[in-house]
Amino acid sequence: MIVLRKKNRRSSPYKTTYNFSIYPKINVSSDDWLREGAKITVTIKDVDGKGNGVAHVHGVKIIVPKTSIGDKVKVVVEKVRGDIGYARVIEWFS
Image: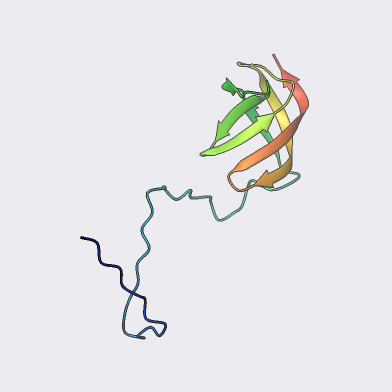
């Protein structure tokens, strides 16, 4: 038998509430290196469903269009949404 209880609308100042999540926290360094306009060098490790190249840098996914697996490119980040960055190629390395 499941018993549902109403939450008290008032909370005690002496009570500590903890929130737990099954999802890991993504720690981004305090210098905020992933910002719009940042230039970084990446190696494409994967391709997504739309055919865009995907690189992973410090736990952050960088999506680069018009690239394939194994390409080493210098990119400029155009848009950042959460832990995903969208970038365009500015230089190709062989």
